[in-house]
Image (cartoon, rainbow, N blue to C red):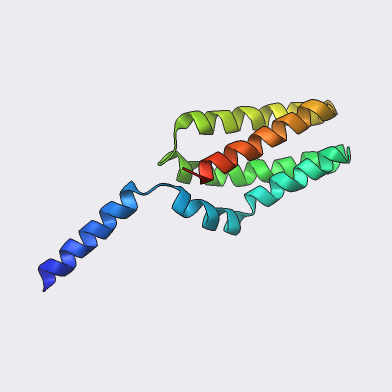
Amino acid sequence: MTKKIINIVIIIGLLINISSCALFHKPIDERTGFSGYLKQTEEYIKSEDWEKAKLSLEDSKKIWEKLKPLLQIDIDHDYVNSMEEYLEKLGGYIEGKDKGNSLASILTVEDIWKKIGSM
């Protein structure tokens, strides 16, 4: 009986270990509200409320820094690097009040986040 339990625990552990982060993306997003902050940043950019966009981006970056170690285990590092690159560019575009590039960057960040969730 104990061998069966041990085997079941090992199998469950292996399945969890090899599972995709897609299983955890939605719960992580619900707990952290990361996509909500990104959407909020997008809305501030569209309305050209640059101060609020900057603050919302800072909140998004703080959440990203907490999420990154959890996600790096399971996803391609190119996604992590792209996310970081576009978040940094977005900060510069917001600082320069460049609506076009800010929107392009935030939409790219949102798309990367969706792709991470579909893995």
